[in-house]
Length: 378
Length: 261
Ligand code: HEM
Image (cartoon, rainbow over all chains, first blue to last red; front, side):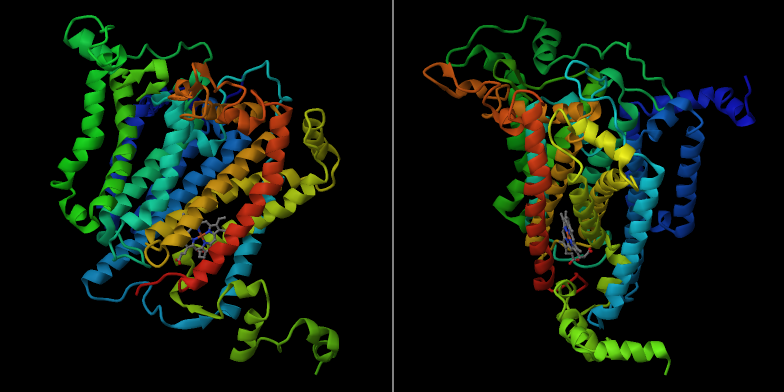
């Protein structure tokens, strides 16, 4: 066996580092780190987007990525043809988030100092021919070249012919839907596959109607739109992009979680048994069995699930009122009743996702309300 | 004057050239405006545009690239249709044949990687529109049109994913379409499915629920292949084309690329 120095480095002493990174990539750590990173970025954006700082960050990440490539398990995942776009996506999203917030930082600074915005002078008009058509032409040529090179280098995948009898493990949806497939772990299919996508679509369309803040229209800024931008980025970066990265790189056979340098062992047992709120409430807290009798007019499953029904009713119906007169007082006054209700329901649903994820990771928690008889589980 | 420029002038002064281009060489303000106005494709643009709107660091040209990638998909897609038959007997082997026999065999690669790139580009376009607050009045409606375009772009990719008819394709679509089984009141394993009944006879089964409508069957089989093919090659592209036209039209009607007021 011949081994280069780099191989030795990758196989030998680095094992401890690999173990550490595998641990940090466990879902709860990964998600916490990503959330903290996002908040740190949004708070310190004026310093962190300085070109030198951002470049250092990009290089550090690249170094991490390239060094990780010496690990055969990691390499085999990022090399799968359909996963190559994900690496591209990570870099492009990183670059453009930087570009946007760099300009926001400059604009916010300029506004404080009474200087003009980067986008100022917007009433000066230039002719579309030649100023715009040439830019478009150049973009078009570069894009064609890039796509052609990509197509020559990387073959499109073609596996064995479709065979209903052989189920691949794991079976994954196309990468852009992996966030929704990840939701299947925490929610029933009708929530993960129907309700949540529906809420995303409706929620996106609703944005212009529930964000009544007139400032920040037509220029990059963070200072003037803190709530809107933080919420949107949380949804896009953490609940969409990060979950795609989870689904592609870290979900293996039986949809088990594997660190980036772990072998995808198909025989690893599936996750532990999960428990519902009803189990916790009736059995663990009250120390009695789960109720099976109906109570007056209430069918037995309503009695059984009463704790969850009360809790969720509080979350979706009472909490909006409380928030209206505390945290969201100013926004509530601005929005009026209908707009506020739409905003807060969308907001609470969005928050429901990480809440359930966190409960699963820490307590193996499954359902608040489990009316399995009617497939009505929350 | 060189031979070439005299030849050029001769061509431009002739009847043929004049019948196609109704303006002189775009060298001054008037002819440049005419160049945009008198061309059906270029006149998607206004004649003059705000300076800040064409700064590359403002738009990232992402909407434009999304559109360009859509065109790449249309062109390569039509070429692929010459070689591909959407039946269980042929589909897989036609794709294999594309790889083995067709000259310059990167057609399928261009189509597949172009689709991936289009998805990334459309997300980035949405991100930039959001971060510049460009969805705010008067552009609320165009943002909504954009969201529908986003959904349709994802569906285009999703329906196309099945067509190679390999293991990757079939099982990805199985995972995706299984969720339709759980549509409330419309999927046979969805919430409240048991309420859809007449005199105690349940009406929703695997053979007549939302998933069945999507796949034209209870599993991903020949009917699903045909259905996805038609959706992928005809229905969704046509709708997307119409909506892109609306999208571009509205950009102009809403006052062009946004900028500080
Ligand atoms: C097939 C998909 C799409 C195509 C081809 C497309 C194309 C374009 C183009 C070429 C522009 C001009 C400015 C620019 O390049 O940024 C534009 C602007 C715009 N797009 Fe899209 N777009 C698409 C999807 C979307 C989506 C998903 C959204 C939002 C959810 C959206 C919302 C908007 C808005 C609001 C504007 C006006 C921006 C401004 O005035 O600054 N579009 N689109």
